Figure 1 (cartoon, rainbow, N blue to C red):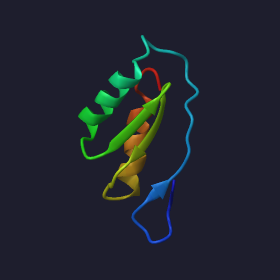
Figure 2: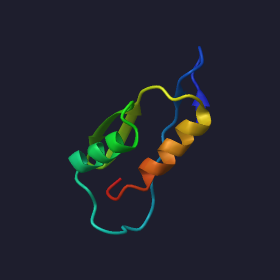
Figure 3: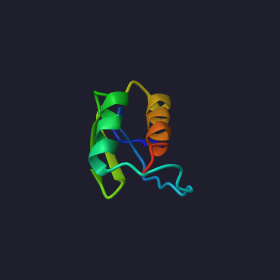
Length: 75
């Protein structure tokens, strides 16, 4: 993850390659799970792909959020 020019924004594309563990959640369920984790972020979910937007305090928090989101079944 790298900062955008002007600072404060981080952009990176990541993919998840993991075996399915449990029943995959629907897009709406994934979106709700992310809102429960971080209500200050906006999650756009389509076919299990997620685009997050919003502000976080620093890059370490951004990385942790991405890590947690990648663990949601169906991502």
